[in-house]
Length: 260
Ligand SMILES: NC(=O)c1ccc[n+]([C@@H]2O[C@H](COP(=O)([O-])OP(=O)(O)OC[C@H]3O[C@@H](n4cnc5c(N)ncnc54)[C@H](O)[C@@H]3O)[C@@H](O)[C@H]2O)c1
Image (cartoon, rainbow, N blue to C red; front, side, top):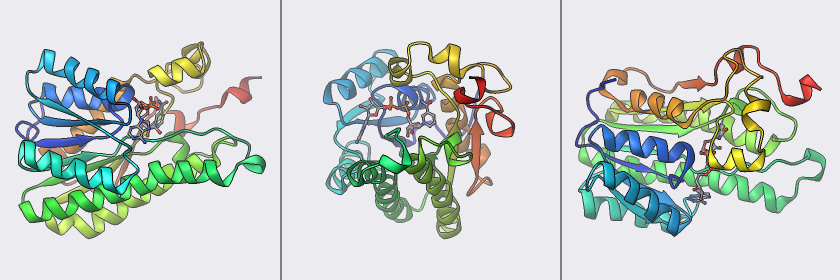
């Protein structure tokens, strides 16, 4: 696979110590982009950046901190500019998935989900957009939505709301930033096997792999390849869209409860 307009660009990927964000960071570095790899866990951020640099020397710098916090967002963008000179791409990937019965869901849990999934993505996009406009080059943003931002799921009301809102954020930013040569899109992963999902449910593949027409769970690389395409020169006329990467789940998938 070869896309143009990735090499020598500078990307910020949040929540990239493992899982989907790590796969995105790794694929970007493999295609010649410099990457700021953010994670709230300093050890994970450092180890992930080290792993990428061992394959693609000097392509990645770790930046640890809470991607939902304004001070971290501002420092991270400043750090990116002082180390790599510019910001071309952002992938606000960090997101928290809090399952819970709607009737019992607490204000504290609601706030946590909103703060990282929405507040963090919104203000990283705002800060990066100002920088991209100043640079005057092409820029691109890819938000990490979800299949449950398209299709409702009873235990994920607050999370699903944020993931639907990210799709609307991409539409709004396309409208606002298109004239500055900045595109904003989203990807909506279906059930994807990551360290977290594997830990939450040891038979994750067995259970969730049955639920979409492709009859398998997604791999982080499936999502990363779509993100890479949306960031590339080839995708510059795609703006404000959400691409589900879900094995066809949203066209007729099931939930584990449906199989019981
Ligand atoms: N895995 C899936 O099945 C799936 C499906 C749909 C959407 N998504 C979305 O994709 C994104 C990545 O999912 P995943 O399963 O790879 O991620 P994950 O939950 O495994 O988290 C990845 C990394 O994010 C870090 N992180 C957590 N909170 C953070 C914060 N406040 N600031 C910075 N980093 C933080 C974690 O330490 C971890 O290393 C999320 O937004 C998630 O909602 C995932």
